[in-house]
Length: 278
Image (cartoon, rainbow, N blue to C red; front, side, top):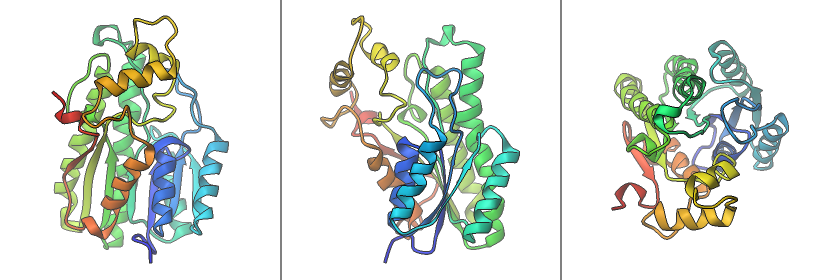
């Protein structure tokens, strides 16, 4: 028996990284998956976006667990397309129980040097896209009348500030507020809403040269190992430079399962002690 048998979970940003990991982990415990991703580059990021092939590979991983997967190439900034993808997925899989709003981007610059496009794109995807994901799914959860779990992937940057990430931090603080507000609004329907706050997670979003330079500006051509060393000494209390996606997926699983059936409105750090570091 799986912890999510006969459940259906929707995951945004599911083509790779954390999103893929969440989809697989939930499927391993019995959930069918609606996997959504933009599958395209985003103008203001310095790393390549996921591809349709990546999303198809996520589906294959889900299916290897014996569960079903429905995929949709959708930009979370487009509410109409998002609503259609949700309806189509629910029609095929029969229901919806868990929503994991994971899709997000990352870029960096000092507050006063951010371009308007950087700001607008960050807020549109990392905050408004989360609200649109909720807007597309909450009516279905209410109509079903069987409760549900909404899990918003925020960041340690949703609970504290970091230099050079003002637009990211603002968006992630907004995500924290969405979860807290949703928990109050939706509790009457037995729908829970929580946010998760990871420290750095080793995915394509951070594992690239622009990020290496941000952490090691003293080096002309910093490497992955230089980045690792900087994170090892500067980020977390526990002796690790970063987490693996599955570390966050395990928290997602807990919040999706009945083990957390009376947990709502919390901001759950999975951060190797980063928020308590002095």
